[in-house]
Amino acid sequence: MIEILQRWAGGEQPTSEELEKLAEEECRDRGRMAAFGIGPEGVGEVIRRRSQLFQSLLRENPDLPILSEQLKTLWTLWLPLGIQLAELRQTLGRPPVQGILGGQGTGKTTLATVLSRVLALLDYRTLSLSIDDLYKTYDERQRLREADPRLIWRGPPGTHDVDLGISVLDRLRHPASGERVAVPRFDKSLWNGGGDRTEPEWVTGIDVVLFEGWFVGSHPVDGGIFETAPAPIVTESDRQFAREMNHKLQDYLPLWERLDRLMVLNPVDYRLSKQWRRQAENEMKAKGRSGMTDGEIEQFVDYFWKSLHPELFILPLVEDRDRVDLVVDIEADHSVGRVYRPGAWD
Image 1 (cartoon, rainbow, N blue to C red):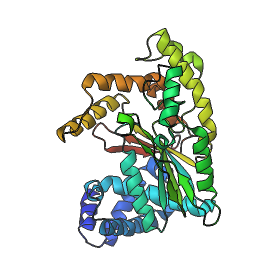
Image 2: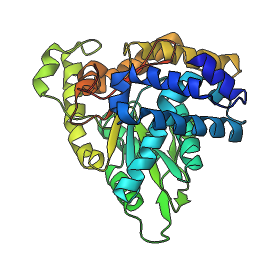
Image 3: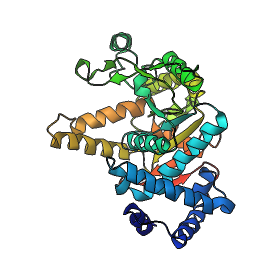
Image 4: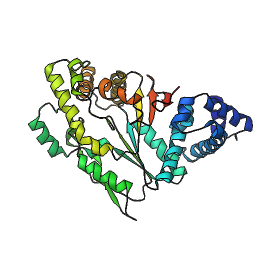
């Protein structure tokens, strides 16, 4: 596959033999075909259309080197997902909201960037919205922390303005003709890293919304599970905090109801998030910027695991065919592994 894609990226036109070979390869991954709604009878036309989009995307986006660096991911994930979202836009007759659940290092930002370029080629305008953009104001979060000193960092359930998120998604999904929608934005650098809202971004004519975050789409679990919860939930105080965060997830369910689809960027081992965080911090230090020590990283990640532990809230979703439409396994080197729909992977 990669040799063919490299030739196309170099400007060579697809041959019928190459298209046929890639169609055969596509049919060997039944899980991915099912995830993108591709049937064996129409795979030839799918490959032909994707090849055209592949070349156009590379030709028109020379400023995005990630496209040529990750040709396989572009072919097997980014392009078919972009096409699928464009088709969903046509089917719904309104902007769909694609939920993206993923933690540190899973590629949420890259995914959103590439999808916006793919959809632009299909004449659709994309908006990326993070759950971080829905944080309560700095003053509001300070009052939260005064009431509950355990909320040492923003991020867990309860630190977001859920009603704001519902209002924004409703207006984006069902915009009045020519309506300008104020999209909240959040600057993490304000207040010495405490972060605060900035001026909203005014948008109009949005066709597809990408709504991402580390627990987007997560649902409360049975409270009894915390009696035998995994580390770092080890003390009774930890368990009580986890129970309360679990309860606060109830407030987010109306927000998740605005999602038309949900995909999970699933690390093959959730503990990789600490490794990836260390890599990110070391890269910042190498550029002369400040970064967390290994001990601070350990404390930081443990804090989020104590609020919503991946083993309890994320892993069950990769098998939940009712709530999740697409699962993308992320390998230790950040590359894409299996791509499948729960219950449809063979």
